Image (cartoon, rainbow, N blue to C red):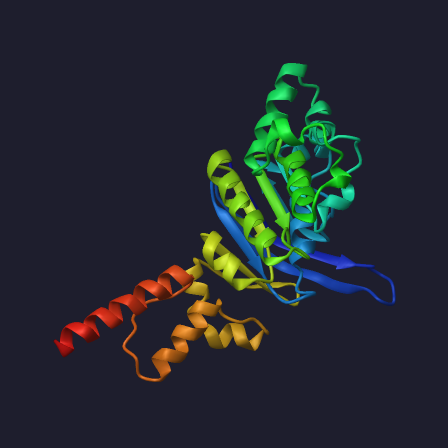
Length: 289
């Protein structure tokens, strides 16, 4: 399965005094199994873009082809599309409503008219995939959980529907550093397990550099850059011109290069930087010996 977005344009409040161009001629393709990071400053069009991918918003013009079906055409049953494309909004825990974790996660699969045994299997698998103990937490009220646990339960409710595409809009917003890292590790685990297309919208360049294998860069409603993380984050000046920074390891290593240290290649993660620094220190020691 793939998603092909062609010349997508969206206008908010069209024809009104305060109309605004939110997306302008956005074109890209996401292929089966890709992990796509979407970055851009506030108001760049990231959330507007992903809300088009499962039909929550309709474009002014352009097309979105999901698995060979153009979902912008009349007559497309959007309920069927949304079964294939799961969207997790910012602060999804605010959408929890059932009396137990198990019932909340089961809500989506139950609407797919699955038999009880399949629903139960999906609920158990989804809760375990997000890193929670099914037997321990199944009977708890979701409202009694920590913020990070609530976030995981809300995401489990989407995962339980087994979408072919999973979209996460700032899934770590408002979490403390540990919960932030735990949720990211969980997202990576889910992507590897489900082998779906995953879209991650984030302001955090380090997170995108560590998780994504393709990056879309939005600016003022336009897709201004796209490519592999090492390609995108090698363009420091271009990113800086639209208010975006490099991942911290890349920024620090670039500073070291400017001071004359002989580092080569890209340094997108802490692990990349540590390996380069270790290699430099080892070479320096060998030369001294």
